[in-house]
Length: 381
Ligand SMILES: [Zn+2]
Ligand SMILES: [Zn+2]
Image (cartoon, rainbow, N blue to C red; front, side, top):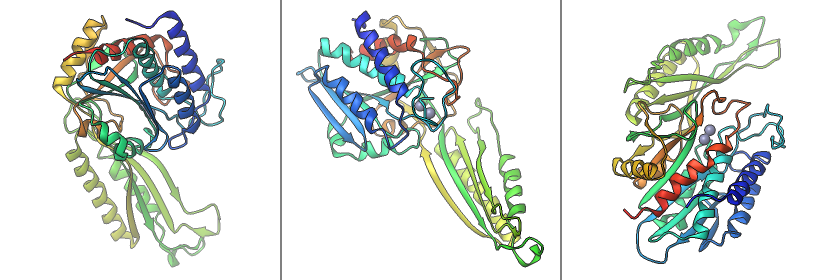
């Protein structure tokens, strides 16, 4: 069974409403309410709300024993101003769906449409609309919720749309699907002084410059290499705009990406060593913090094989991803606990990239995503 024309139109309408009313991580209250209302109309066997924050879960139960499957999408948008001018453009200044999470919610709701008409033959299917993916907080919070723990899924699936990949193609990969990511915050504390007398203060500017210079030189941005290292500058702050004061404080934010947790740890150690060296050289106090940690997704080869046959049954084109993707995805916490698979769904060539201000999720790939998920939900192995 596939989506009927009416179901597809309803789903597209939902997707565009979600796009027009985006909410950033941890604030997805209205989005969750919109999803709950939509799901209630489809009469699932159970709905859970406020799961790990604003998370929503819905159960479609066959009533007979069998595997417990979980399909996950994300609720949150990004703090990016939308550049598009179409009718469903964001109505919230400075916030928009630039990662296609509106489309992922539409796909999961499409699956709900199908299961509402025809329940799976065995086992249970849980749909999870997860909050706060973009800041790496949501998966952790959902996994700490007792109601989620009690479900104990035996297979977990998520997909992400991929601009640049042929529209509707399914991208699969065994093992790591995306990078292990961490963000480091380095603060050098010196002493302010009169700008005319910097000799009476401790200025962190040189250490800041050298830190950028030396840490960015650690880049080995070669995705085909197992020891890839990507160091990106994200943000920096030095002193204040008072022209009579020589700077006394510097804060530097970098993001670090590797294919494995081990390599990421070694990269973190290298950067910490540089920061310590510079702080010591210039007599600065040093503080190091981390935020927004994402673990690499691990795709279980057995589940990948099931997804491959589901895609073939659904007459979808499967491509093998040569290298993992460099972005982080907190679904990695799910695949660390339960056997599962993160799946790529081609969003089309010539599309703006994820997080670009002119990006919009292509509705044309909704049927491909629903088809794949429905085949997996009805699978008997
Ligand atoms: Zn994103
Ligand atoms: Zn995303």
